[in-house]
Length: 160
Length: 257
Image: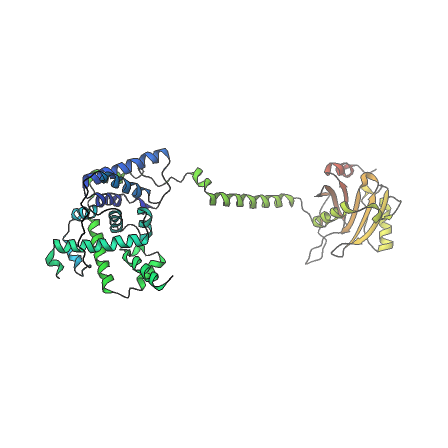
């Protein structure tokens, strides 16, 4: 397995983006690695290229299944603004993680995997079991929703 | 693919456009990116994505979790043991191919280990011996050693002499023929063990024309036949018998009477 696919800091960040909570992210991260260590000791590590991320994703989804779910409300959407970069710079990583973790899956997985900047789109399709059109839709919608949220959070910056 | 669906696919690809250049390997993606023509909308999207990716990289790794990174072998890459490597179909196929090639080399090496000048011709003549019937030869009732005069006088073949070891054997028949390289071959059939003798020109150096000599007797084998070959005065003599070297050895070691 190439080293990039086992990038453990990125695995933690993925858990963090999926859950929006450092403590929960650590639990899932540790559980995933413990499982990997046990499998490695037994000599039956899967041959799948992205099994660590796939395993962590299912654990994250399982962990949030019993959590309080956000009400399905129609979120505002705005076109990505030229000045969005400065708005994002004012964000805290935790705020972004909370925002992404609140998205319904599979949009949540798509956004978390995409913004890790670790995988190309085909790899994301593989890990999240998505089609290209679905991934494209979730990312485009996610950008527009995030832009609307940024505009509401940092209204002055959005007018630049 | 219709123009509409092609454009839709291109739009989909652009929505998934890589954030950093290291993920540009995909050809359809490169093609879609090349058609953006520096659109402001796409540039905004890229800036937006890069800013978010930078923010994600700022996510701090808790000390407890960072401990796992130092233990390099905790999640090892699938260990490539010798056993696993050998089970790999590609390695297996290459190994078998190499083994077969090595086998062919060894076989050729061993089979040519005892080669000598004229051994190729001797093998061909063993094939002729196997297919010859006695009716194909002219009947002759004489000792084999006396036929050298016949070969010289009737066919002009010099030094076509049967060696002393086989000179006393009674002949059933003989003939002279040309092989596929127009060399004149004398064939003698004797009653002893239905043995056949062959006399043929010794091999010569292609540049100098000198006879390539070799000392004593040499064995050749072909299709169940064995021949003992010796060279004398530029002519090779071969005693051929159906069987093994054991069948010929007593004649060769037999002392001259």
